[in-house]
Structure formats: structure tokens, C-alpha cells
Length: 311
Image 1 (tube, rainbow, N blue to C red):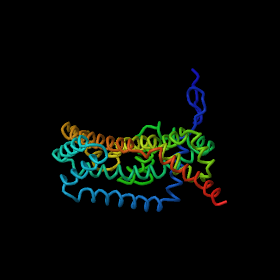
Image 2 (cartoon, rainbow, N blue to C red; image 1 turned 180 degrees about the vertical axis):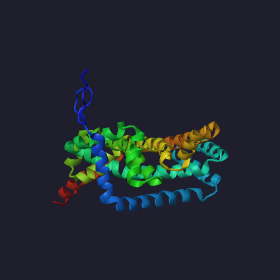
Image 3 (spheres, one colour; image 1 turned 30 degrees about the vertical axis):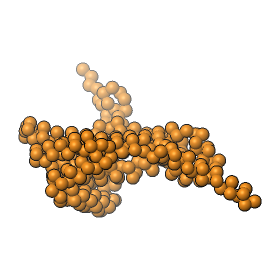
């Protein structure tokens, strides 16, 4: 009986094997060998920032901070949201998950700020350049469709276990909506309004700042809302790599088969998610009025009129 010999570069179906895993592993090994100290210092900076914000959030009395957050929700929308927020946050305190919730909130806030600092400029660039849009789109597709757990492996390789690795994985997973919705919002601005701004002598920077961004703000705020929600979902998964907070509580409950702890941590995540979702959604509804655009055009139209009067 003849035996079939399978080489290292060919699988049983006769299709040449692509050693993608080996290429990626070698690439990360090279990066770690040459830039290891840089990533170590970056990890220390990230960890210090997250820990500092977590300490700041846990410093006041829990009920006092819950009241402040509820007041913020009231100011952004109405008293119903404020009251509901206070009751939900008080329930988190009652379940003895307040400190863990604040650690998770600190991680989410820092990750969201980093994701928006990267995502909004990339979205603006993609909206103003078709070539940049075509280059950015595949990267966003990869980041958005790759299973969330996969991102934990490379970031742990570069940043080790702890809040730094959890934050980087969270930023990678939460970044794409900020880029996509910023680009979409700017592209949906009426071309006639932009042309009117150009006709009255506005510079491209003024068009972006005073015309496109104000009109695109509802869509941009929807992107910010999605970034926060994805950051929250990933922050819980990041508990597997030492992210701390509610994610670590969920991980502990799984390892111990502790149903009570799992539900307490899960309900705390739900309270945070509802609070952040409602507050950011309400903030998005308080967008700047298109009157800003009209005021720009009036200012621009006034310049030729004054020049004609002086002549």
C-alpha cells in the first residue's frame, strides 16, 4: 500500500499552506526585541493614568459621587434620568461593587479618550481624502470584525498582564465606530452649504470647524456613543488579562462558578452601560444649531458689503 507524504508547505488537500501565524509571530518577536523598552515605558504611563483616575473616582464618598453623576445626567437631559442614574448607582454601592465599577469606568474613560483622539482625526482625513478613506477602510474592517479575544494575545505580548494591555485591546476594539461615523457625518453635510462657505471666502479649516463639524455633530456623537459601549464590553473581556474592575469580578465568578458574584458584577456593568449610553445620547441631541453656519455666512457676506461702502 502506497503512503502519501505531506510536505511542510502543503496540506492534505493539496493547497499550499500559508504560514501567516509564523509571519505574525516573527513580526511581534522582532518588534518586542527592538522596541521592548518603549512599550514597557508606555505600559507604565498607561497604568499610572488609569490608576490615577481610578483613585480620583474612588476618593469621594460613594453616595456623594453617585449624586454628582446623577446631577450630571439631570443637567444633560432631565430629572428622570438623574433620578434613575442615582438609583442605579446606589444599587451598585449596595452590591459592594462600587470600587470595581469605578476602576472599570476609569479604564473606559481613558480608552474612549485615546480612541477618539485617534479616531476623529482619522475620520476627518478619510472624509476629505478618498485615497485616505480607501487605505483606512480595510484596517477598520480588520479591527471591527476580528474576534475580541484575539486582540488580547498580541497586546499581552507587548504590554504584559495588567491595565495597560487591557486598555490597548479596548482601544483597538472600540476605535472603528469613531472613525466610520465621523467620516459618514462629514460626507453627509450638504454640498451646497459647503460651497456657500467657500463662495464667501471661508478657509478649508473654517469650513471644517464652523460648517461641517457642527452639522455632522449628531452622527459624530453617535460614533462616540458606540465607542463607549464597545469599550465597556471589551473592558469586561479584558478582565482575563488583568484589567481589573468588574471584568475581573466576572472572570472570578466564572472560575469559581459563583452565580451570585457573576450577577452582581453583570448588573453593575448594566448600570454603567445604561448611564453612559443615556448621557452621551442626550449630549448628542444638544448639538449646535445650524445657525452657526448661517452666522458664518453672514460674517463672510458682510466683508464685501463693507468694502463696497468704503469705496
